[in-house]
Length: 104
Image (cartoon, rainbow, N blue to C red):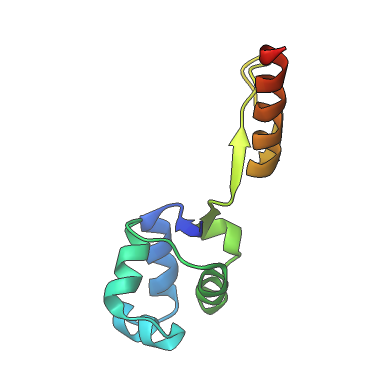
């Protein structure tokens, strides 16, 4: 999966606060400026290691700028609110149990 930038404008603002240009920042975290641009504009995802390094260099929490695509939010409609967060594995198990129930 990977980590996707939540908001390009917030990501770029955090980058500017470091005092580095986009190219300087990219080289500082060990990636090409083109790759960093692709991540910033939500065309590519970062690994957990790189997302963590980027957030540390920006001095922000990982969750403030990146969305972990390995975790899915499941909304169950109860008064139009989100009841719980489940992992993809939990969702697969639930779907499997529902399929088995309908086969019987």
